[in-house]
Image (cartoon, rainbow over all chains, first blue to last red; front, side, top):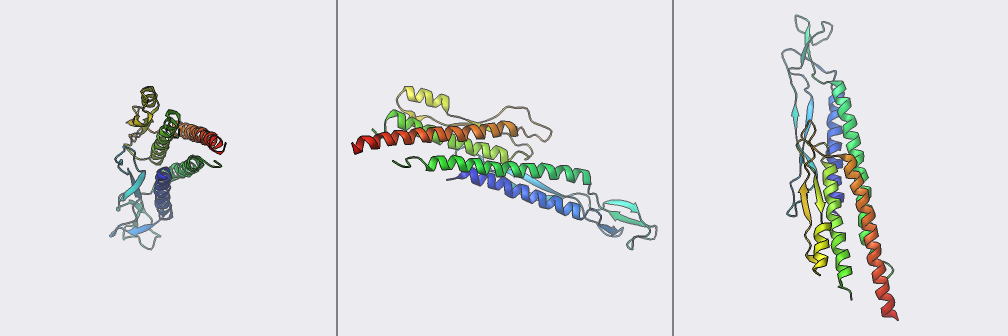
Amino acid sequence: MFDAINTAGSGLASYHTWLDVIADNIANMNDTAPTSGQVFATHYAQAAEIPNGPDGVGGGVQIVGVTEGDPNGILTQAPNDPMADAQGYVRTTDVNLSEQMGNMIVAERAYQANANVIDRAKATYEAALSIGKGV
Amino acid sequence: MLDDIASLTLQTAISGLGQRQRVTANNIANSETPDFTASTVDFESALASAVAQGTPQAAPVDVTPTTDPAGVNGNNVSLEHEFVNATKTTLQEQLLTGTLTAKFNWISTVLKG
C-alpha cells in the first residue's frame, strides 16, 4: 500500500545522502596533510536500484556504499604550511570543486523531483481513497 | 449489479494506474543511478481485449523495460517524460475514481428509492 510514496522516499533519502557526501567533500577541500601520511580523499556515493518485487516493479533507489578517491592527494609546494616536509611539500586533497558543485545541482534537482513525486502519488492515492465517498 | 463489467473494468484500470504510478516513481528515484533502465506499464490494450471477452478482471498488467538510448552513465530515464506520465496518471486516476463513485451513487439512489 502507498508504494509509490515509499519509492519516492527512497529517492529523497538517497539524494539527501549524496548531498551530505558532497557537503563533506567541499568542507574538506582545503585539507592538507604531511607527505608522510594520507590526506582526505573525495568521497563518492554509489547508488543502485532496489531490486524488482515479484510484480516486476522496482522498489526505488539506495546508496550501497561510499568509495574514496586518491588518499595520496596532490603534492603541493607550500613551505609555509606547518605540515610541510623538508622540501616544502604537503599533500592537498583531490577534491574538484567544479565537479562537486555540478553534482550538487544534480542531487538537489533530483531531490526536488522525488519530493514532487510524493505530492503526485499522494493525489493519486487520495483519489483512490475517495471512491464511494458520499454514497 | 455491483460486479458488472463497467465496475470491474474501472477497478482493473485503477489498479493498473496504481502500478504505473509506482513504476514512474521508481524511474524518477533512479534518474541518476548508473546503468538503470526505465520501465513502462501497459494494461490498456490487454484490458480492452479482456473487456471484449467479458472478463476485465483477468487483464494482465505488463511492466516492460524501455529501449530508449542511454546517456553516458548507462541510464535512460527521461525526467520530462516521467513527469508527463505522473501527471497524466494522477488525472486519469481521479477521473476513474470519480466515475466509479458516480456509479455507486447511482446504485445508492436506486436502493434508497
